[in-house]
Amino acid sequence: MIVLEIKKYNSENQELIDLLCSNHWPFHTKIQLDPAAIKRAIDKGYYSEGKETFWIIEKEQKVGIIIIDEIEDTIPLFDLRLTEEARGKGIGQKSLSWLQDYLYGEKGKIRIEGYTRADNLAMRKCFTKAGFVKEGYLRNAWENEDGSVSDTVLYASIYDDWKDKKTTPIKLDEVPY
Image (cartoon, rainbow, N blue to C red; front, side, top):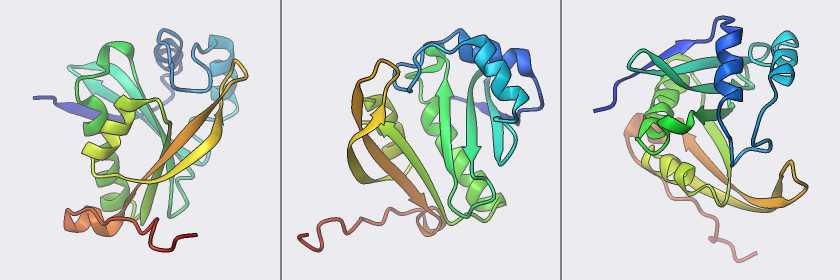
């Protein structure tokens, strides 16, 4: 059984740089991050201004981060990153469940949105297992560092589904145009 601790980032800057730069992020815009770029982002408030950043901790080891963007909005976005060693163990799903409990239960949000590249099947499974609903498929909507463009999939969770422990189907094809 996976037991996670989610702890708010509190300027542990070198640990953040180490986690982000010692792992590859094959389904993000930049696969390999640059320590100087992360330091500049920290200095500019990227991980704190208008955002909340949390460590994902398993067995007292930091194995990932969740960055909640637009935290003051009723419909925040987020970025979830797990270290290479933490992937494929169910930590993503548990992190998404925590995110829902936090944003709905403590912050009073009404909806949470997340985007992933269409070829990121592991993240797509995490979304589904955590009760998020696939709401959109966006063609050529993800620009990659190498200049290529990928399709993107939008997943979302809504407060009412979380509260009632259900999944409401979308009405994407209710109207044929």
